[in-house]
Image 1: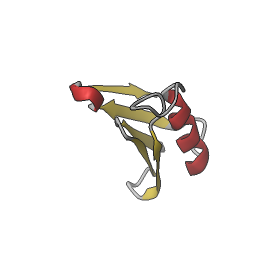
Image 2: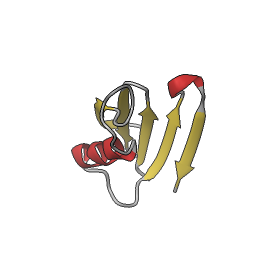
Image 3: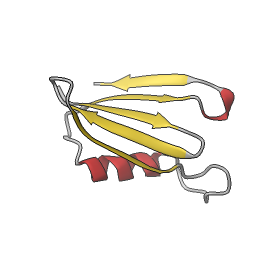
Image 4: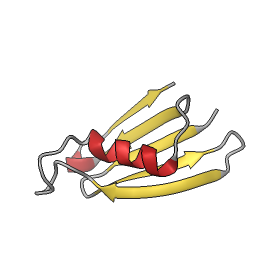
Length: 78
């Protein structure tokens, strides 16, 4: 099971792709869209960019978190 971990930050959205055995397959970051004057894009625009950059398998599990703006949340999708 490959895992994509994503941190939606107020400045950058960061991601790491992790293999079944815990090996880090790749990391990437992109400016977070729609925040702090970075346009009116959807915050998921950066997520899509990172999925493309890391060539994330369709069936990868996704674990995401954010503490941007002083609030915290986390989500997971299998």
